[in-house]
Image (cartoon, rainbow, N blue to C red):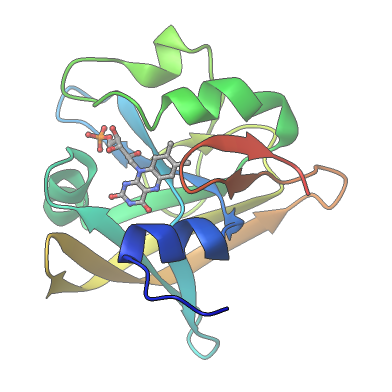
Length: 165
Ligand SMILES: Cc1cc2nc3c(=O)[nH]c(=O)nc-3n(C[C@H](O)[C@H](O)[C@H](O)COP(=O)(O)O)c2cc1C
């Protein structure tokens, strides 16, 4: 039977969402990592994607300041550490160092990405759109690398846990 449900329940029911770690560069040169479910492809020609970020976190302001970000579709060995990147802010924690998440050099931008990922997207900011309490950042994908032997993770139960399907 269909019942009226709040948006949070709809998001739980429609999980799994594709899970990623979004990387940004902090002013001190270190890399910030944020757990993100709300990203989507936007265009093939040119290749574009969009990310939807709460106005409260650090990552949105870093995307705005730097005009670029990385999106890493991380592999299953980061199941626990990647989830922790969604529970604290880069304002107080150096997540890559504290959670021992290995980084890899980019090819077209200046923000590192996550080593051992299934797909790595390097993105240049195009537009910023306000969406209620979130901001949508649309970006052109300027480099894509992939390794199909790596199994990706999905966010289950909303933001509850990460597991392969
Ligand atoms: C599985 C998972 C998925 C998440 N997806 C998003 C998302 O799509 N957008 C968002 O704004 N926050 C999302 N979060 C929450 C952020 O990762 C969290 O607020 C983080 O602390 C922000 O870090 P920052 O302040 O370093 O940017 C998610 C958290 C988890 C655990």
